[in-house]
Image 1: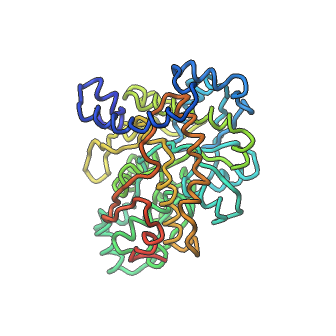
Image 2 (image 1 turned 135 degrees about the horizontal axis):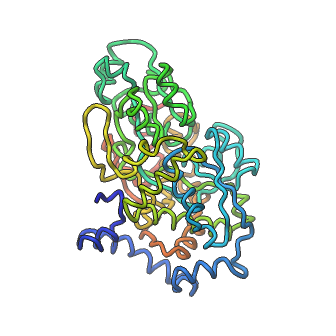
Image 3 (image 1 turned 180 degrees about the vertical axis):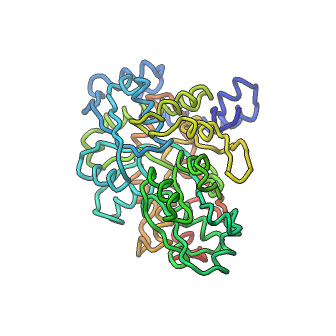
Length: 433
C-alpha cells in the first residue's frame, strides 16, 4: 500500500502507523479553529449535515449543474461524484460535459455554456487577469488533485542520448536545430511545469526552443508523426506514449514539485455570486468523491475502469490503472512505486485551495512575461480562491481543514516557495523572459 492510494488516517487504521496518526493530528489542528467560528450545523453528523445544506434557505439555487472536463485521469472526482450519486446527496445533479480543448473550456465558462469545469489552475488566473484571451472575474472552489502529470520525450531524443534534463541540455547546446515542445494551454499548469523543468537545466523555453499548444488527447498522435520532441500533459497521455512505444517519461510533475496543485474546480465569479449554495453543494460532493477514490486500491481500480469509457477519457483502462495506483514505468527500464502519485483527497490536503498555490502561478506568469507588471499577489489569490465556500463545503462533507491558508514547498531547483515575497521570487530566477 502506498501513501498515494490511501489517506494517512486509513493507513494508520490498517497498519497502526503512528507517523500517519501524527500527520493526521497535525492536519486536523486547523479543524477545531474552523468549527469554533462555524454554525452549529458543522457539529452535526456529516450525513445529516448534507441533508440540511440541501434544505430550506441553504438549498442549491440551481440543481442541474453542467461541469466541463477534458479527457484526463484527473477528471475522476468530477465523474465519480456523478456516477456514485454523491451529487444528489447534496441536492444537485452533476452532468459531466466532455470538451475538446482547454480553450473550449475557457470560452464556455465565460459565456455560461458551462456552469463549472475541471480546469487548469493557471488558466483560471489567466482569464481573471485577461491573459491569453478575454478577461472575466473567476473563482477557484477547490483543488481537484495533486501530482500525476509528466514530461514525455520522443524516441528521436532517446536515440540521440537524451534520458533526462541534463542530457537534453547537452544535446541542445551541441546539436543546434529547432526543438519543439508542446503544452496544453499557455497559462496552464503543463506550460508552467515544462518551462520550470527546462529552465532548471539552463534551457530557456522561449529562446532555446519552440513551444506549441496541443489539446491533451492529441499529444500522442502528434508525437507519433514527429511534430514535437517532447510534451507535458496529464495522464493517461504520458503512460500512453510508453504503451505505444513512441516516447518515455523524462520526469513526473511531482518530480518537479512534490504534491503540487494541479486541476481545480473553476467557475466564474458571477456564477458563485448567483449560486453560492450550489457552489458549496457541488464542492462537497466532489470532496466526497475524492475521498472515495483515495480510500482503497479497489476504488482506484473501479475509478480507472469507469473513466476509461468512451464518454470520458476514451482509452484502455490498462493505460490508466497503473499510474492511478502509483505504479510507474518510465519506458527506459525503470519501474517504481511513487509515493507522490496522483491523489484526489489525502485527508483534504489535496483539495484545500491554498492562497500560496494560486500566487505561485502568478509568479510564473510574471517570470515568463505573460504579466508585464507585478500584481497584488495575495489580494488576487484571496479574490479568486473562494476559501470561504470551501470551508463550508468541507464542513458539509466532514473534511478536515489545514492550520494555514499558505504552505511551503521546495521545487526541483532547490528554490523554496512559501508565498512570503512573491515579487522577489518571480524576479529571482536566472532564466526568465
